[in-house]
Amino acid sequence: MGKTTLSLAFGLWSANKGLKTVVVSSHPLPELAVTVSLQGLKDQYPVAAANLFIVHIDPREELANQVRQQVPSPFLARAVLSSRIYQSLIEVAPGLKELVFLGRLGHLAERKSDERTSTEFDVLIWDAPATGHFLQTLMVSRNFDTYLSGPFALMGKEVFQFMATPGKVRFYPVSTLEEMAVEETIELCGRLERDLTLKPSGVVCNLTSPLLNSVDSEYEELTRRLLRENPHAAGFQFILDRHALERQLFQRLRAAISTALHIVERRGGCDSDLGLLMALAGVIGPRLGDACL
Image (cartoon, rainbow, N blue to C red; front, side, top):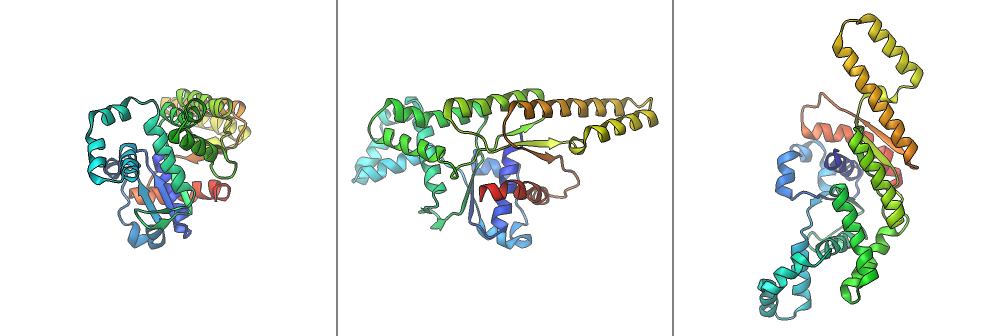
């Protein structure tokens, strides 16, 4: 869908404005570095380079840190962490890793200083996982509060209250205009509102064609002209059919979702990953920035 690319682009936009920005990636950093390069950032955009932080939260490591904080003896803490009971618990306890992840995310999002970087962040952008895992992660915090007691239940309550507080968190599902992606996005928005009472602030339609922004009369005239000038060009007909399907899916999305749709067109001609990200930053930043910041 392009979630990671757009998350990094929006992060670069806010960091370039002088805001301390952290992007929480759903990918481990070595994996992310293989797919997206920020080479040249410090030389070309020194302000953004000084204000952009990219982190990956490992729930197992967060749990281990909590054990070390709760157990006063380093020897006992190491014994607990290496025990088979502990190792089995963190793997089989439903939602435990997700809850700890959200707890850490909430800590960063509340603009508290990150003890690892000594940085207080202004903006947090979560490059969330795919739909199923994302919904499961949010449901976990509510379920811990509803069904359990004790410190993890308290953590779940605090996390879900934070996620549901208007003005603190905004959700922007990202979709391409493909049939399966559109249906999945409609289902995601419905479940966020129905099951979690969280209304998305907008939906980003990524990788669209330039023709999507044209009004129906302009599009129809262009279609007639292209077919008239190229009556035997099968390639043109394929392109026009694809555009027609894209417009139908966009209308389907607009009719099913009661929130703003933000169009991000496909981009070509960029000579580097950084060039592409900054071009996208100029598009996605102004559209989402005022609402988020």
